[in-house]
Length: 89
Image 1 (cartoon, rainbow, N blue to C red):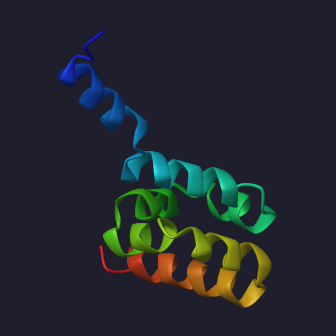
Image 2 (image 1 turned 45 degrees about the vertical axis):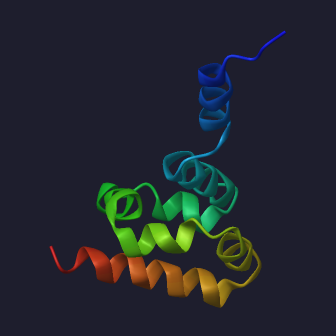
């Protein structure tokens, strides 16, 4: 039985997570942390997290997520970065 090339390629594309899904997974992971849930309630920070390219770059690296979950200073640093990114609008 021959495999349709288009079906094979489309299946591969659909299985590969894109930056949106990776970002969504990162946010879901951080949502287990109280500090992040409280921080994420503010719409201006939500906007920065979803649309600021520098903030997104940080969140798309899974080791950064784990460090923020384990180290309070890393979490505080992330919060300051997001707050500072909203000051330039």
